[in-house]
Length: 321
Image (tube, rainbow, N blue to C red; front, side, top):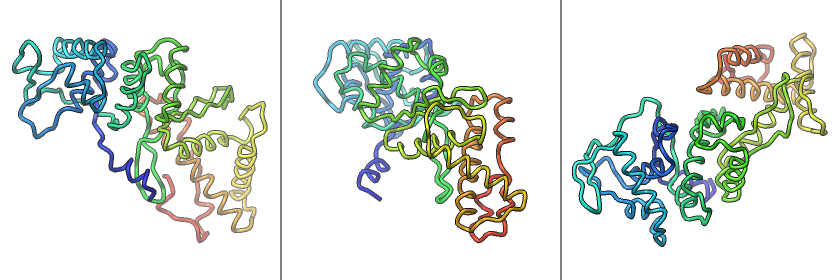
């Protein structure tokens, strides 16, 4: 394990309520104030003292105070109180003391955001960093679980998103702003975005893939699977060697099912490709907002691997039922 990877795995992560994060009635300042409260608290504390200055310090790791941002955080605290999202036991002229049960439980679950990701955004000179932080958290909240076949480890790795979906989920309605935010998060090396530039599958454009920057390899691999989903219906004006290879492997799979034999190395390559393809569709089926129509379509695309059952490389535990 590399030192960078070890640092990532050991890093402090806070869980952010998905219900609060996606609540469009709340301002960006309220969302970031909520994140600051999550950073400043521990379940072992009987009470929590907050104001804009305290939250700013937690959000930025103690960088030089910025009055406008602190004012926004104070406004965000008031908004959270008014909406009943935090419970206050004592109020003074300069701070609030929250009750021990200061926050609601979330039936929609939580999104894990790293302390370094929060401070990277909040310490940047980007003018709209409060809005940018909320946007980043919403993108990460859409990531789906991807299973590593070798280790069995599950982690939130990528999101398959259109701009219309981003508008629906987030506080951003402008395509120009989405592009600005995406470009900034890529520049910060917080996101990696794989663009398909108009490629389509089954008469539908392939959605861009979003992932954390350190998961670039996984996102690129997922993009390769998407490019090889079909032997005949993938449209692209460019020449893509990976796509051609996947088409060839798909054809080999069809021939193996019909009884044709191939060298072991070629059959093993085909098996791994089909297994990866099955994993992709299984991941997509698990996406929380997928329609019944798409779920049925993806389920029908999962391939039977029993034609490889007599091969030494075949592992029943890997086969997706």
